[in-house]
Image (cartoon, rainbow, N blue to C red; front, side, top):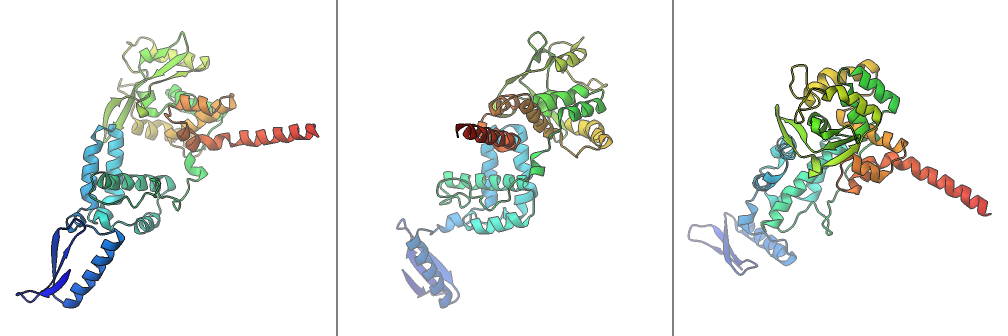
Length: 358
């Protein structure tokens, strides 16, 4: 390592990197060259030294690679990622060198945004996955948003509040809401009793409804993205069967009569498929307002389905299968609060048993 003045009058710092490659950097002032040399030696000694070529790699470059790699993901998932990137990450982080991202600075920025806990977690997850691409391709040394154990460092992120989990209607309220949404009452009942997603209800074909066994096969989802409709398998690529109460099956019969097996059960008066945006705006939201119910999303009716299933004696594993989760942990994280009363009841029963012992 040496600092010498060149024929041009600049000060040149020459050194060998960790791979033994000769490198050089020029400065106008000798003091700047000396300061850089000191920082460079410290970085090499601590193992944090980054090759100059890698320091030009930006978060935006990694996003482009990530987006290309995720081409096999479901279309809605890809659209969600693109929306989060454009809306939240791109303007602040696209031009930042990937090796300059720090956990502290990213967390400070993320929390300062003031987004909801759910949105905050999605932004954090996407940034973590983007940086993972850099690590896996060997272009950055490590993912600063992961702990040493490889888990997302999110201890300081806000927790999801009860209001964000989605409120649950009771059975009487659900039936009232369904009646208010006529002539599409049965759509609401499928959402609130079966825990189906709206796309799964919209994509339900006549052949998927078995009136003899009272079973509904959920095998296709009709989704709206960017104003366009397309079909795909349900989320997590999992087909599932919902054993429906006879009450619901009877109400579905008029919708299926006179239709071919491949036709959608639910259609508009113009014989077009249901769209989430139109249904919510024209049918669902006005019904909530008319009844004075909370401003719930259509997706929140899955919470109602879980609550109804629990009241009918279903356990967390029944719920997992009904709502189509691939992992029981997802069910617990999303709907575990509905089962908290069971723990309290269990504690009371244990108290009674212990008193009887004495």
